[in-house]
Length: 126
Image 1 (cartoon, rainbow, N blue to C red):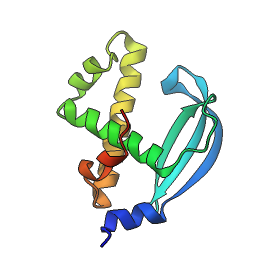
Image 2: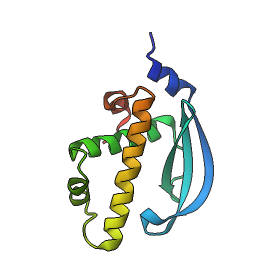
Image 3: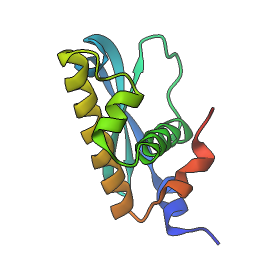
Image 4: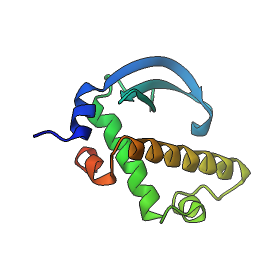
C-alpha cells in the first residue's frame, strides 16, 4: 500500500518557468523549474548546460540533499555557512544566509505535507 507521501509524489507535476538570472549563483543565467507537490511549489534551478527536463527524482533528490545538509549542520546557521564556504566575504555571507532560509522554508513545507527526510533519501544521488 502506498503512503500518503508516495501518492503526492505520483501526482506531482513539473513546470518549466524559463531562463532567469540567479543572483545566488553569481548572477548567472539558469533554467528555472517548479515541482508542484500537493499543490505546493518547490523551485529548482540548473545551469544552461543541463539538457534534459528534470525528473521528479532529480528535484526530490536535491530537496533531500539540502535537508540532509541542514541536518548535518544541526540546523545551525553559523555551522552551515562555515561548512559550505559562505563565510568568505559579505557577498557569499548574504548568499549563504539566503540559501539557509530557503532550505528551512522548503523543509517546513515538506513537513507540512507529512514528509520526513527518510522519505526523500531514496532520491538522493551521490
